[in-house]
Image (cartoon, rainbow, N blue to C red):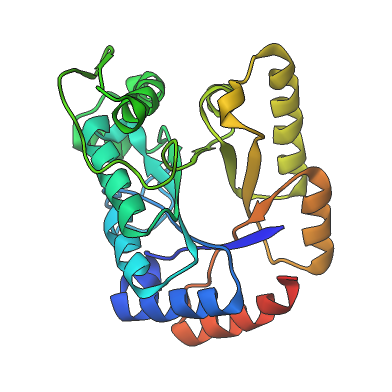
Length: 279
């Protein structure tokens, strides 16, 4: 089992000094990865399905993780998740390739279609197009990363006779992890990604999703170049050795618990409580 931490660039860790100290402490303790989420805007006043109050600070993922890359050496850096349907994939491909280069190949690119309709409205992007935009954007980014002479023609993005250098450090580009448990997200996971990421789920929910993935896997032909599917999870509730064992039994490869938001002291105590479980 690998262990990450979620919340590396938001809340308390939107403060760069706090974020650096937490990242360095996590790396020294042996955590495998640091993860951050994304929302460009949040509705004010808070309205469903917003995950946080409108004044909750969230750094831009590429900016925040590039900063953490500079103050760490080994720990991997994950986006959990980048809202890819809200982005120009040509620009996003450059951002994420740059982050992979600056971190010397430590990026894990978690992506999702998005669910906050108020955010799509503020960005002027049709909410109902988010699934189609997500699928196309993955292919467009990989064209820029992998093709000797990148060319792509799609419904939302088209290009040719261009180069986007530097390419990512990791061969094949950073591994892509899909967030979400809809049927579309699970199909996308099997056909286009190296991994799946579940957020704030308990054992029963994870078991159900993994069973659905298995059934879909019998119907779909997974591209062999994607390799075995890696399962990552931010669990709901506190971790215990018994819960860790149960998640491993279910087939989870990486646990990414959510950091507390009370204070930096509370984070330090929480890290101390988790360290004996790292194995």
